[in-house]
Image 1: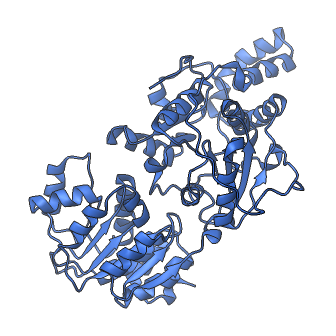
Image 2 (image 1 turned 90 degrees about the vertical axis):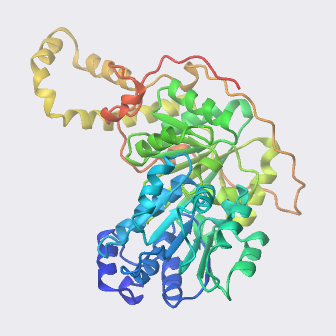
Image 3 (image 1 turned 30 degrees about the vertical axis):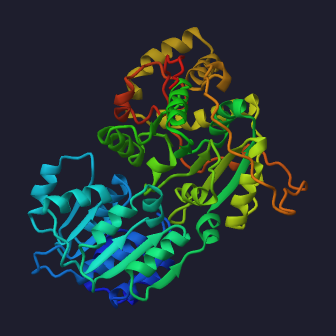
Length: 502
């Protein structure tokens, strides 16, 4: 359905067109008319399905520019999601000159107070910081018309129920309430009953969320084998933009440190990092200046990043809903995605539970050999060399090149170049990843076992579709924080051979 058929004004349709939207997604198509009509809505949809525009467009449509009061409040579970929501609402409401303010913990509260005094019509915030402003009386929400609970299941998982109830208690009884959640456990339904008026429910099934554009594979591996397997798979699949999920903060630290040690352009985020550091890493990743983001589930909640081609589940999640959240980070906006989950022998029952939720049988993937990884590196190096040949500065070196060709065979020179920009075998740089406590065994469910008729697929068949940058060691070395200035060097050589233990 076209956005022009949803009852939006011309100024909003102009903003929609400028943002690159063409046809409404299912959640937008079903939600926007209900919100415009003033109905309460429960939307089952995860990040990446277009839900921000689904609630944002009708909220902006209803904003009264002459009213100085806060007219809509959006509660988000994480700083990252709050910031992203504020940015999108600002873009959509720019032609109407709608003021949108974001508030979140870890930032200067005095600056936020000054911004709130400028009478924003829409406020987006995290639960803790919103309550802080309410206690200080620097935010008044007693005249809001619309309340949005975004990623509600995440907010409950993170222990924000008391904060949410306290915030809702200060809003008008006759407000419109919109609730969005990737999953619908009983706790979410209770919120619907307690705080909403005859809500309409819009559901995007988990199967639709996870299978349309995402190829899902698993690799069976011992704990001690996973890291070497993952780095070889990265070499073979050649992903353009990757998220690696680890179960704990220590795991994220060790994985990111190990990837850097092996020459990959990687960084990790988790809850113990400062907001400034997390924001810097996320900015680099969103701008394509970081190839691999390693994250815990909590740190990655609410991340809305386009262009992610691969998701690697280094640790299988303990519940199927988390899996849906994780792989929802790829396969967006019509682009193809790949998810790969490492499973230890005693975790197979967790894999089966995920398959039951998504109604998809994951395909087993055979781990690549060192020779296959090497061929993948060389193939990627060809792309790198083609990019290097297009560099306008090459002419400066033609005289030196002629002298080298007089002394050396051309094949020897190209071989030396390939040797420089491809990496050694993954295991050549030793990396120790501390074993995590294994997940408790699940009981087996009936006949839900893997069909032995499934063939193993070669990783060569599932190479990433994105353009690669520089693939290996570079003759110059740069400080890791300055990588942004060297986009062509996608991986760097690092002399890091130690491992970190908590």
